[in-house]
Length: 356
Ligand code: 9MR
Image (cartoon, rainbow, N blue to C red; front, side):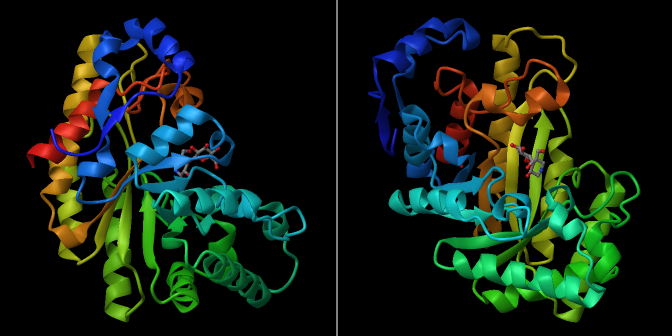
C-alpha cells in the first residue's frame, strides 16, 4: 500500500488502552499498530476539527498532524470565543491552533465569521444605530481575516443562516440590524479584507431539507447574478449510517458544481446509533459505517478536481463527539475509537482514496 505508514510508537500507555478496548471494534490491536496516513495518499485536504486544549495531549496531537493535513477550530474561532465580554479580541487559542497547523504543514479552514449561535452578548446588546452595528461587524470580519491572512486560506463567512423546514432566513440579530440582504454584504466585507481567501457558506440539512437546500441554491444564484463573491459551500455531513440516500448527497453536490463552486464536506460524522438501540458498537454497525464513509469519499472523488475543496471530520475520537451530549445516546460517529485506534470507517476512507 502506498503512502506514509504510521508505526504506532506513541507510548505503552496508549497501546495498553487500545488493547483493553479491543472489544469495542472487535479488531485485533496487533493489526492496528500500523496504518497508512490519509494525508499521505489523498489528492485533496483531509481535515479534522481541533480544540487547542488537545494540542498538549500527545496521542491526540500526534495523530492529528500525522493523519490529517487540514484543521478547523471546533469552536475557538467563533465570535463568542475571539472576543471578551467588552468586545476586545482574545487571540491566544486561535493563535495556538494556527501555529500548530503551520508547524506541521496543515491548512486551516476558518470557522466561522458569523453564526447566530455564537453571537456575543456585547454584540446582541449593541446600542448604537444599525449603521454603527454594521460597521462593527465589518471591522470584526476585517480584523479577524487580516490577523490570519497568512495562515487561513478559507473562511465560513456565515454558518446556518436558513431555518429548518421553511428555508426562510433566520431572524438573527444580523438580519434584524442589517436587513435581509445582509449575507451579501458579509461576503463583500470578507472579500475586501482578503481578495485571496476562499469564502464559503456552511450549513447542515441542505441534503434532506428541500426548502433549505433551495434557499441556499437561490442565494448562490442571486449572488452570482449580482457579482457577490462566493467560492464554495460547506455541506455539514452530520449523517447516519443509512440516511440520507447517497443519491441525494450526489444531487446536491452536482447542483453546487454546476454553479462553479467548491465543495467542502464539512463537519463529517456518521452516527451508528440514531435509534439508540445499541449500548456498544457492534461489528455489523461498524461495517455499515465503513461502507457509508467509503461511498461518500468515493462520490467526492468523482467530482471534478477543481470542485473538491476538502473533507473535514468533526472530531478525532468517538468519545469526543458533540453528538453524544446532543442526542443523549451512546454514539461512535468518528474515525478513531476511544483508544486512538483507527476504526473500520478509517479503512473505508482509505480504500476510497486508494481505489478511486
Ligand atoms: O462541536 C462544536 C462544539 O464543540 C461547540 O461547543 C459548539 C458551539 O460552539 O459548536 C459545535 O460545532 C457546531 C458547528 O460549529 C456548526 N454546526 C453544528 C456543530 C455542532 O453543534
